[in-house]
Length: 153
Ligand SMILES: [Cu+2]
Image (cartoon, rainbow, N blue to C red; front, side, top):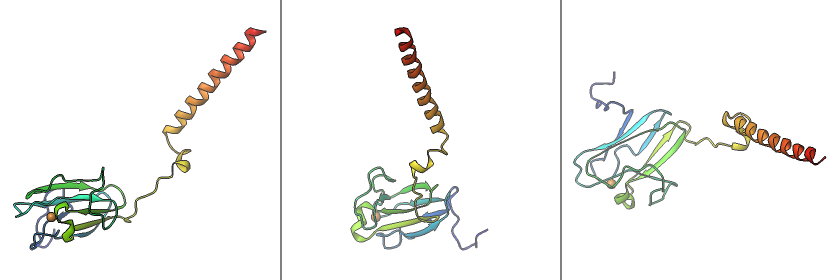
């Protein structure tokens, strides 16, 4: 049980990020969490709207296309993300990024595992089936060619 003076986390949240008293910053802009934990960005009835928009690189002022996005800035937000991979998640509040309303979540090692397909091909489950299909086609082609030659004789 957490100490009594700590706020109770909403169910499903391992961490909650809100808006601080200034109204122009996240109250917990730097988090370090474990893989599999959930961060909840929650605020209610703020005087201004805020959001959470993933950026690609530190210092970016526009969101990453295809990145995580809580949507348009709102005065009340409940946006939750469960991080299932090591990574460093960088985000901004779009209307206040110029006022340095930015945040970071370091998940696990903080470094996304680089998937090297050329190395993993032999281990992957889907690839042997694909290879078998290819050799089956090659075999069929060989049979057709062989059959063709045979009929020419
Ligand atoms: Cu903001």
